[in-house]
Image (cartoon, rainbow, N blue to C red; front, top):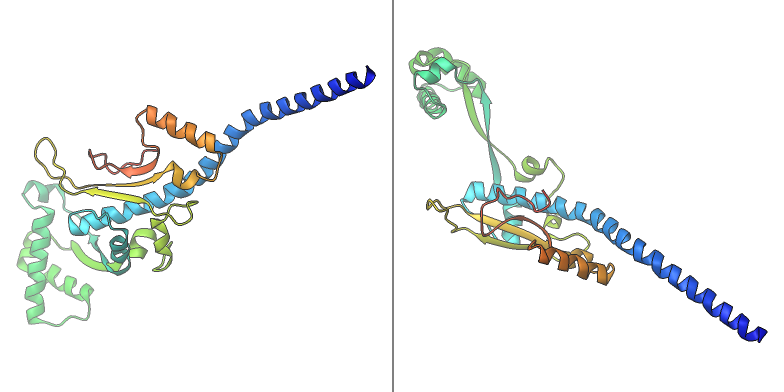
Length: 252
């Protein structure tokens, strides 16, 4: 009888420990999942933002987006980034008189062409000093001190301030914690608004499964199910190929 009682107590003790374990696990597992998810999504978002920067510049130079990640990388590694250096600005009086930035630059460019036909200059500073003082159109329009120069910069340096080089830039196309999977990319370069205006669109995506697959399976299923029921994309993405959204991320 005593032996039976001891066995019952032992079984109940084990059951209590098991129940306590599952109770604790039921609380800690979702917390651990969400904490790990949050940590990983910092890295995923970083790459999505960098991809967006690349796509926006690609569109700026080509008038369209690209869904080809290799073409996008080649663009980043080989294309120059053109930038306008500005010195001086138009006054309210000049603007009221009808002088625009475009007209002012055109006047400057014509003045530079004429000056270069007549003289040789040591550098651009000397060229500008000459036309500011001697070109009648520049002087009459009050453009002394007004300067616009287009220069070519290294694309990676201009966009990412030295964060990447030609080898490391490849990693922005890969989803962190995914064992090398690449972001899903789609474009819609023929989208038109209700007014008939063409607005190229792009979308870069990282589904939850790509960077959370090694975590608790049930928590991942629950997350995907919850986002799907809310009609949200089950993952992280920037842009939208169905409607303009200013290339926003779905976490913003």
